[in-house]
Length: 594
Image 1 (cartoon, rainbow, N blue to C red):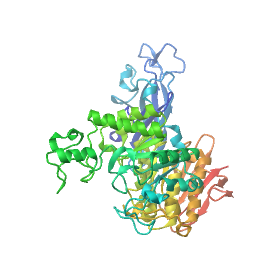
Image 2: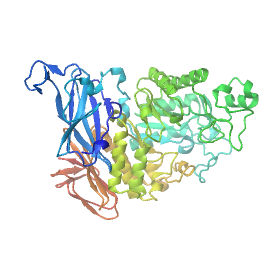
Image 3: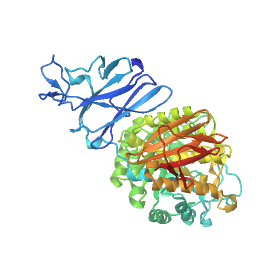
């Protein structure tokens, strides 16, 4: 037994309170080393009992010991670990627990105090502890997010509906390639004019890149958090847009930057002009005076971007203002969520107060942080509801688009992604395959529509809340910024309608069959490196679905492990007499078992 490979702590994501009655426990062991794991558990105040019937008995002790031992399920593995899981509902919402491991030759008990040949009986203090399921400590995110399919809009590039708002030197729509400085005049009216496109596709949430007053086409250099940039329209037009989207069953999430502002913001310009005597000097991280931008800024910025000075969110006056901003757009315009740019570089105390402010305005508002790495510190229930799931993005692109990984390596990466966060976080995590910050997924796949369809199928049958970047549904391509921010063409001659219908069908299947979204477990059933194929198993106690992926350039015959019988292929609308099916190169199937 490889004891040094075993690790557990009584904290998230190893153990967490899933709901008011349920505790989830995870356990890691060396891959292939352990045959079974049983959870030893009970209420910390109920380990003694005067009734010996049906309970463990130690004749050397003055009392009988009352402990349950329940098998844990091996839910997955990667190249290093097996992952074990159990869901427990302790009768009194308290828990002490340990683990009994069996490797086929020996058994051992693992507790918070280390290893034992048999479970300790003289003191519950040996065992891991969940003191109590306090409702306020349970991670809660808006339930509507689980069923939402997002659509990201970069406002200047989606549609120009009101030419009278065009910034100076606006170019004719889609007349040339995008640059980091040019404008095409996209606005709110353009979105209103194309709501039918979003409804037809099946979109139920829009994530808007920043709409606040700024100098650039991307608007991440905020000049005024309380004002809409004139190129997009008025506050009245924005309220009209929000109301129309809501009438069509579409939620609205705005993008805000509380890490930095624009160089030309009045606050920072006051510092530039007045130096140490500026009333705003402590709102920034200034190293000396006067303010200089070359060769590098003498003030903290986003990266080393001189036009984006970092703000001090610990400053009481600034913090109070920003929290007012957070409440204002929720209360006055009814937005349904905030996406927070560069969220990992802002202090945790600010985000805790931000959450309180937003949830007071609307308890069901969604708070999404832009974090590209392990995000546990932000996902304890006191800051964000979710983060942008770039680990999923990378795993999917590496396998389906870039041919960097095998089927087994894809399973390993995705299993690690699932284990990074708790299940109730995973259910609302924001999944994406591209965005305004990355090359478009179809471009990463070198224009290969089959590979791109596999990417979309993977995302739209994965646990969480998926997001489609505007134009992906019609085959829009583009390299890294600014190429990924080109205009939506709105010309059927430039649209791949077959691709649109494929994605539309995937979205509808996700809505019609909740097991494909968040209602069921997510497991790898088959991983076939030789044929570069995988089968994902999505199950509840009542129904089973299998999602087949042939990520190779040849026809593959795939048969799931442990299943026989007939099914209905939802993706291709056909009855199947056998679960062994042939898949064309770079294609997928979604089977509902009969």
